Length: 141
Image (cartoon, rainbow, N blue to C red; front, side, top):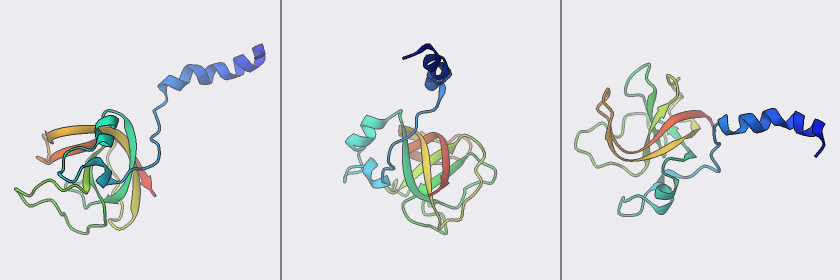
């Protein structure tokens, strides 16, 4: 490599670790669980890493929030708002990097975020989740 080539690439090499990791191909919500609703090997292996999931934005629980729920199929009403309901294997709690601009419930979106596993209750909304994406971004698919 010549000196000029190295100098041209140096800024990219310095900035590369600071760039966020991109998720690979999107996974399906059902790929995060086994049939008994335990975490799949894929979910356990990807915990703490960025990944992409495609789905639909459920109607928001609260306006001007960084939180929304990703569902496997379009839902015009909240499918998980009944107390005492078991955690469904086809939804995912999403915590975005900024306040969420609500997307129509019937348009698919692609969400990328850091996978977090384990029981958690949102202190503000009281929403219970077993699986979440943190520091998420999303766009129409």
